[in-house]
Image 1: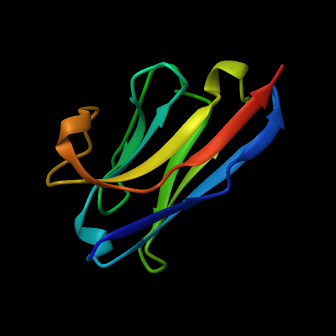
Image 2: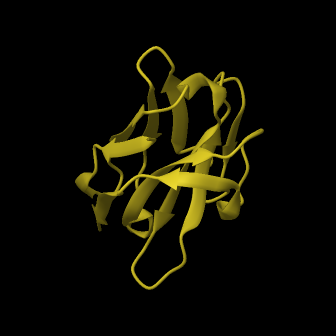
Image 3: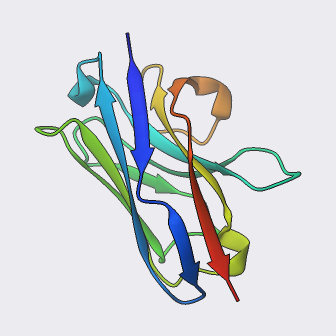
Length: 124
């Protein structure tokens, strides 16, 4: 069965950086586009970034463009999210997810398997 496990969250001051990892198992990792979503308290889960199976195509939410970088290492079955210049509004639980098929997309319903999430807290 497919398992996605996030790690790397924590508490950081505004302007700082964090690197999230998503370790995948139970799937042919390189076949699938993967994505990151986040959910803040009282808010809907929202798209953050996504990457194609080969890593050659990426997609970002406008709110993180230029600050976050998504990447993957298919040999390690792992996806990453490098987050720089963090802001208090980036505080949320961050989830790793697998795209059902096709290219990266911002649409939540196009993703099927989800990790348990990792908390990112940015203090002002």
